[in-house]
Amino acid sequence: MNQPIAETTADFTARRQRESRRQYARRPKKIADVVAQLVTKRGYGRIDADEELAAAWRTAAGEQLAAASRPGKVRRGLLEVWVANSTILQEFTFHKQRVLTELTRLVPDANIRGLKLRVGQIS
Image 1 (cartoon, helix red, strand yellow):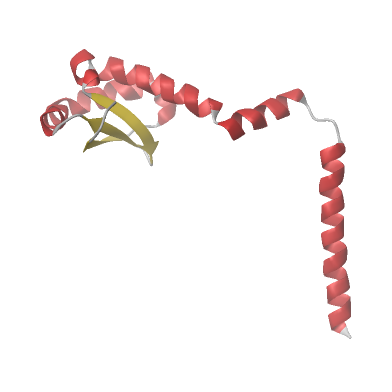
Image 2 (spheres, rainbow, N blue to C red; image 1 turned 120 degrees about the horizontal axis):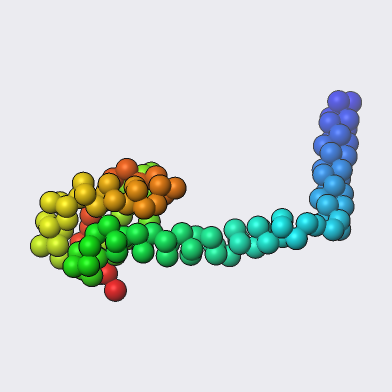
């Protein structure tokens, strides 16, 4: 006896949720909300952030080191940096603290707390 009531209740709840979503889809939306969803979905905000980080990287690392490296993604406060070879990696270890200080000054929103250096393709 309780089984049909539980099934009926679950069916009613599912129908109500579907109808609620359908009504929301039909309503007019604010243009700001639509643009925000589009920017998020397409990743345009991330592209701007990547360009800002690349510019800050060139400034913080200096012309010679920046030419032999490229910044990657920031994960858990660590900026992944790809360098051309192990010699450049060794040079970065000497300048790591200066570069990190400069990066935190230039892009405070990135919350970079450390650098993770890797040898790899930089092009």
